[in-house]
Image (cartoon, rainbow, N blue to C red; front, side, top):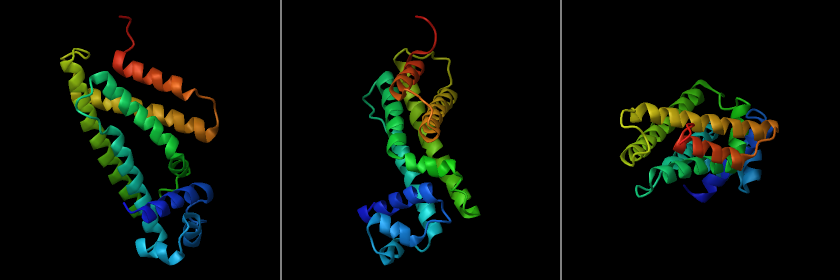
Amino acid sequence: MEQTKERIIKSAIKLFADKGFHETKVEDIALESGVAKGTVYLYFKSKEEIMDTCLEFIFSEASKNYEIPDELNFSDSIRMVVEKNFKFVDENIDFYRMLSKGIYSTSKDTKMGRRYCERKLFEKATSSMEKIILKGINEGKIKKEVSPKYLAVTFINTIISSLIMVVNSKIKGFELNENEYKEEIINFLTGGIYEK
């Protein structure tokens, strides 16, 4: 993606999180991103299109958290997925602040677009996690009788739940030792809860 367009998107996300969708004007987005208002309109027809593109951009970026090199073993693959997701939350907290305000639901089309993006992200994450689960089975870390598909969904939901906790701690200001929590999630996913 071109740098100017990405800067506009990131500026819009910050402003939507800070001021709200309806209170943010295209002029504000232009000012925040350091471009002229006309430049914004070169890339986007409307503020609604900016919002839709923000959602597409973030979900597309989030899907990269599940791109793992084939040569990594099961445990290192899980570690990489969890670490990438935690880092992503840190780097994109404005997006999560925006979501927590319900700003993504500006129109029926935006809601449908968000659901489509979420579904694509979940499908990519699940597919990638299934491959990681198969590594775990082949390495003897996971029982062969386990369904890779359903275990992948369970792992993804565990990661998503942990990220919700991290986001809430940042937005609502309650204390959470993120590094310790991240390590606990990694240990749980790679080693389970049983004594060995």
